[in-house]
Amino acid sequence: MADVASVFGYLGIEKKSDETYVGGILISDYYGIPVEFKYTEPIKPTNLQKILYGKSIEKYLTVDVLSKKLIISIQEKPRFILVRDMTLLQTQSKYPLIFLESIKKETTDADATDDRYRSDMIGKEYKIVYVNNLTSDEHQWLTTISKEIDILEPFSRLKEALDYVCSIK
Amino acid sequence: MFDKIKDFFKDLADSVKKETGAISVLGTDFEFDTGIGDIYAPLTDAIALEGFHAYGTELKITDLEEYSDALCVVKGFNEETVGRFDRIVKTAVFTEEASVSSIEPPGKEVALRDFTPAGTDTRVYDESPEDTSLSMEQILSFPLYVVRGISVYSEEPLEAPGLRSEGLFASIKTNASDRIIARFPMKRSSVSRENYSTSNIKNALSFILDRIDHKPRLKWVGIFRDVPINRIKQLTFHESTLSFTLYSFDRRSIYILDVLAVFDEVTEKYHIAPIVRG
Image (cartoon, each protein chain N blue to C red):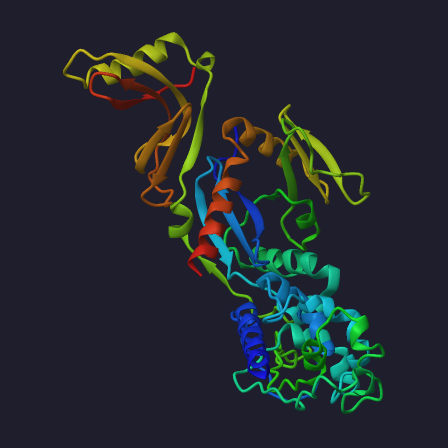
């Protein structure tokens, strides 16, 4: 019997064309229904900050600032957090971070050749990449959810919400 | 002649203003003296964009290059401003006060090869007037202008952000909002009817038919899993996808069921009924 009381998260960072960054985390229940949503204020690095951080500014902003801040801020305790950007796997988190993508895509974003990462399949439809070992229990739970709902669909809502947040600022 | 030249510089200033009209001028005005050779190159693009020609002549300002080498001495720039010369001129605004000064044009009898502009020790022209395609007036007019009132534009005051020991992005705030995420509907794709027994589908259809008081013409839409049936605020169908928003995300007393959806072509309404997964 699946644990329907558990929750899990979706973490995403949007970079807009004007170099504004905004991040959000959506905590969802077993049925994909939101139970918590947190987002950051849109932030646009200044020219000075770009110079100071150089090429690392994107990783610093998305991983060390926005993602970390969002994960710390949530009230719920997700079993794991799903991401669609491999870079976010580097975020310090007390919850397992899992990169998830559909293998139906013609091209894959996931490059799990990095020794730090492990990859696996969820059913026949999804590929996952993660940093720390995923327990068999969590793997099974993720598999069950993926059969129950369109597990990628909340990412679309998260993106729409972040676009909206940027548009109203 | 000099009125024409004044007009030319006024037009030139106006065209540069057009190019820089959207840029705010933050720097302090300062003055420097320069010949046309100094300013022509960085302004070539701006002038070319405007299709500028030297007023009243056939000579394009870009053609001046080979005749103005001796005048390409930037006067009044120190080491720093020379380095910024290209940027300064690109973003310069030739103010209305831009003035033109010149010597009086000598008579046609004056030998051009003897003329040396003030501040240089190079002759403007080493050839006799007969050897050039330029008229005397044109040659004399070019090196003699003093453009004043250049404003320096600074994109960003770099000294503004303080370099403190704390993180530069430490002040980022997070906000919580169920309302924002609730704006965007959840979606459910229709699933195969193979997961449901025929009797369960019939029961769901009966549920719908019992609540219709006319003879319907029903069209199959699909079966959708895990729909919070008692919390739906808005519900729409698009192709084989069901989208819905909820009144609240409060998970207490929420009934999540699979539903069968049909479309009644008579009333043009959708109907849904709970369906038990077989």
